[in-house]
Image (cartoon, rainbow, N blue to C red; front, top):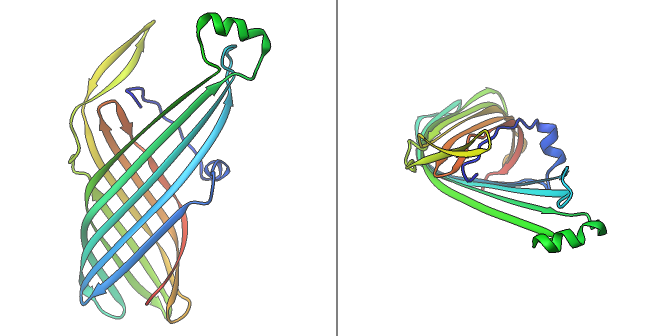
Length: 237
């Protein structure tokens, strides 16, 4: 953010511990003949806190919000009882917001020093960014036994549609240096698993999803790789 780039690897169990509430995920599908229309979205919030080594500021809280929504129109290249293969195109909206607060723990010895330096007891920083990518992909289902199907889906998005100019900040000794870098806007997603038809109108899916972003514009860089298991249930009307 703001040209400062770093990397971090967060395991699935660590992510669960820092959720501020249960993630929200919704989807809806409609079909007319061989044509398919579907939308889906998800929203997640994570938060963490840390103790700082300084005297004037001793604690920090960070809060990150992430949302995406996507909509597609597809056409079934294969459409039979045992197999379905759909080619689709659409768009994906991505939103990221970060909030950072740093504050002191109320040490009375530093009150006068803080007043002399004109430093507040608490500093809050917040910023957000969103963008829309064009997306194309393919998905399919294969019946393997009675009410059980294999499903898989993959898509590619971005195509540098939002690419412009970008920069990063680096430290050289005691100096902060601004360096121009290539701007990019790509995303890749694959998912797959098993689908079970529980009743005539209800189904559930168990699978794995991987989503990678390669977005760099102005001073913002997002190279997230999100992957993990998922469980979802739906109703056919």
